[in-house]
Length: 335
Image (tube, rainbow, N blue to C red; front, top):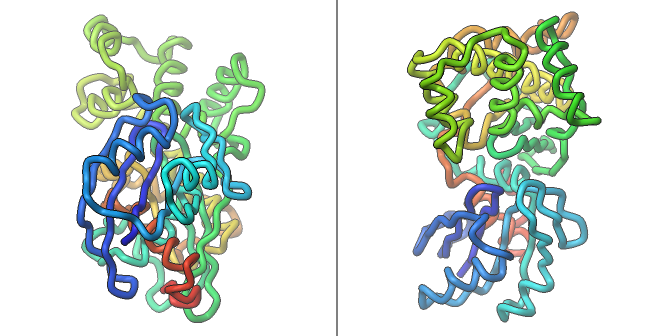
């Protein structure tokens, strides 16, 4: 029995899994608002007490760098310690894994109909792959091709320096530097990033914010989701422009990751935002920014680009990681 979790800054998904080999069956699953809990132990305890299952293996994916079984979460005020969780909740062992590394593991369990293809790439290519996921934050991970299959590994590429590609994006960088000494890609390519872009367009008088929209946003907890929705519906020009900039930056950074990892095996877009704006991602601007890499543009054409549409991917990945760590699955079986 596996207890797996996907801990994010906005929500946490937990599930009990049964398994046969590396094929998983969800027995119980629940989603929690992360911010409503003071610590992960409280959240886990609530889920466990609601069910009669006892976990043999516990694996939790979390948004943040995992170092020696601990993680200071990036977008929620939690210090997560695997040893503390095991001790307080009576587990024999608890493993922590970066959420994007878990996404990479989880990709191995998806079928072709759980992706949306933005770019086919060149058929028959093999090589490394990567995951770039915009959501509450921006996460990235690599997948090393060892000749037999993929070995996922974590990184913190979402916190690298934002590199503007146009005069307008240079102005966006200058605008954000007034409040942030370091402007990372996460500052522009995440939920808060879309809001930052919107506020830049409004505050620099590039686009007018209608009174009705200002009123609507003042009533919303998740302003970025509202901006995105109005952009997709075409209800406000400022929202449309904000999402256009967001999509261009997403394409450019996905291309950056593709080059750094030499991702001939594929570039996968995860996170909560991409599936909601899939029609925008399919428009030319995303792939134009992805391919716009100067002398490297020709090799970018070889790389497939796909959107992950299954929101359980990291949860499956955390469960798979438990099997690997417990020795029930060989690392080379990651295919």
